Length: 140
Image 1: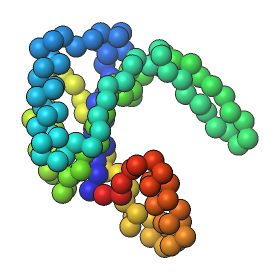
Image 2: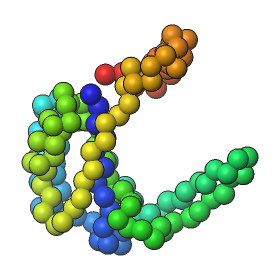
Image 3: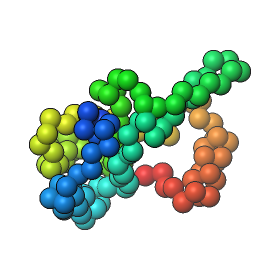
Image 4: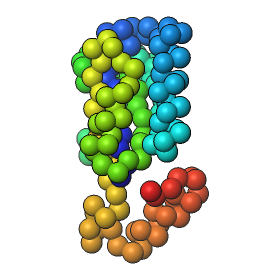
């Protein structure tokens, strides 16, 4: 199963505070462990919300809301995409992360094709596979 690991923002990350060398080295070692174990598929940090935007959809109307966004506890500061056997395995890996400043991290399973049942027809599966082939993404 794939799991999206969402690192929640905090006041420091929203202020644009960058990690120090020690933190970067520790995270680099942790990421290397994830890659060596075949767990990590992707991972990135995100700029503060002041550098972002949201698009609200209301019928045919589209409105753009520029950052920053008020509710820091609802924002994401970074993410990983992991391939694991179970949510429990992902939790065990996450417990080893080099966080120590009160960070909150959320784990969310990624939908698999089977989760969509009959609504994902053979034609739609083929279409999805063609798109994955074009982007280099893999259904794992």
